[in-house]
Structure formats: structure tokens, C-alpha cells
Length: 194
Image (cartoon, rainbow, N blue to C red; front, side, top):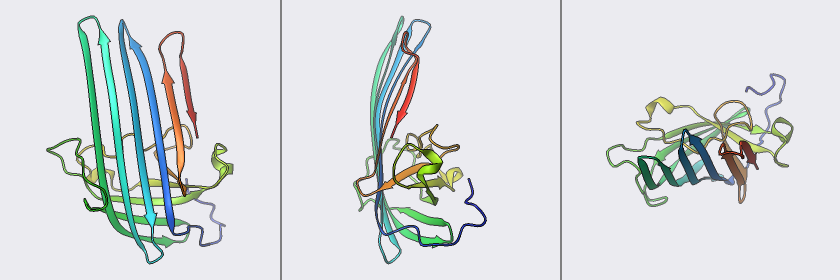
């Protein structure tokens, strides 16, 4: 998803707050088993005019699996803060986020795995490219996924809005995404709303 070659280099990003709040509800059946997941993930990115940036991401998940011979429930929560720098290079915003527990208190999902820095490469996503939100969005790809010991980006990327894995952020109070995926009869619905 490269910007058009003829696009003029303009200052399209403004310092400020960019955020997303993703609320996901999944239900599925397999044989006589029922699986449910209810999660909420948020990511807040704050760009200062001097090139400094800080961020906080968090996720809370509740899941259950019930059926003959199985009845389990789990609840997890994770939160991590970051600080770093941002730089605009033509049509791309490059953001380096280093782990910083002072930004928001760390709450670890896995005690034996350490969170890693996030290297984001972001571009402006006009409403003509996604047609689900009236304002332009910030679409960010995670460039250092292989450095991560576990899938830290889980639940922050919303499929079916644009092709590929992108973190979508809106200015100010941010973007709210309601994600419902129900394969329990007679449901069989998949719905994402922005």
C-alpha cells in the first residue's frame, strides 16, 4: 500500500493524540463445543511538536470454552507504556517506541517474556481508501515484528478494513471499532463497524 508516486510531499500529520479502541466479541462452535471471546484493546499515541512521542497500549480478554468434557474460562490483562521519537519522511511517519513503564504502569501478560520496542511506519489513509470513517486515518505497519518474543500486536490490527496488517488510529478521542464475529447457528455473521 504505497502512496501514489506523483503525490507531493506535504506535512499531513499534526502533533497531538491518535488512538483506537477495539471491542471484539467472537462466538464459534466446533462439534458440540462453544467458544466465546470478549476483548477490548486500546492504543494511544501522542506526538509532541518537538519530535518526542509516547504511547500506551492495553488489552483485556475474557474467553470461555464449554462442551462435553471441557469447561474452561480465562481472563487476561496486559498494559505497556512507551516513549521515543517520531519523524516525517515524505509520505511516511516513522515512529520508534521504546519500552517505558513510566508512561503507563506495566501489567504483563506473560511473566517470562519481555515486551520489545515498536517500530511503526505510518501513512495517511484517506476516507476514499476505506469508506468507513469520515476523516483520514493514520495507518501504521509494525516493521519489527520479528524482534518480538510473543505476538504483542495481537488484537490491535483490524482485518477487512484495508488489505494487510495495519494499526488504524484516528486523531483526538480516536477510532472506535466494534468487531462481531458469530458462527454460532443461526448467526453466521461477520461484522466490523468503525
